[in-house]
Image 1 (cartoon, rainbow, N blue to C red):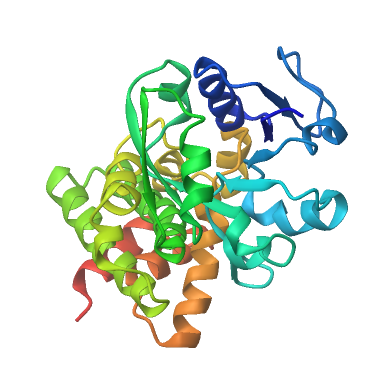
Image 2: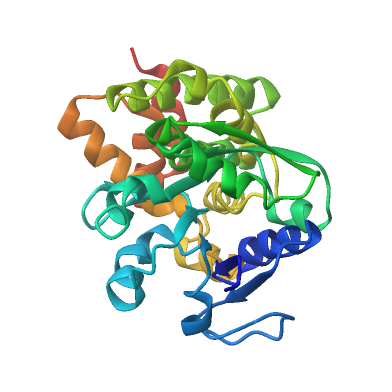
Length: 298
């Protein structure tokens, strides 16, 4: 039996696959579209692995599970981020309909695919309710990807989802030319907003101050390597969302997640001003108008 398979052969999936092979692990990769990659196999073979890493976009996860999941006893590491908009579910809620908690883990932390592919050093967190499951996945990664372990699954998920929304806001801020002071203030308040949201669902403070929270947020909200940051830059230049996404050619999870967060926030009376501003701009409001309203609120 193959030890590890990666499901999803986009840039992130290929980066993780390459890293695992660097560690000398027996691994394969699969996706719905055949790719010219050494070790590429059909899904039927990939699903026979003992450990499976999923990079399937959050909005497609439930459909993929319904169509393809087979319970072979395999353990899964979910390497996607976001909140499902259709049913307002976190990733663990989507996957645990099929896979028990003790066989599920979730990857978080500051890890751009391009830098992982270049074998540049990074640190990440493997989150699971089952410490042994987290440790098993941690051993598959090479030394340039330092792994930490946590059981704060919900905290990691909120961080991974929310930081993409703040990254869109940060891109808008820079696209409008508001300056370094404004961007730093936005990211800092974004961390507060993210923590407020997560703590409502039982997340722990230390998660937001660590790699999953502050680490990933600072990275994603300050670099053009971030797809979500580039969405914000495009919005600030009055490009339509369709134009921006076409130029990206990839999924920017923060677009869908922003709407999900504002709906959840409204239902649970959680204050989410930055996420609300992002949604307003995504829906067509002038970026500068929204920024001024955000700054001048009580």
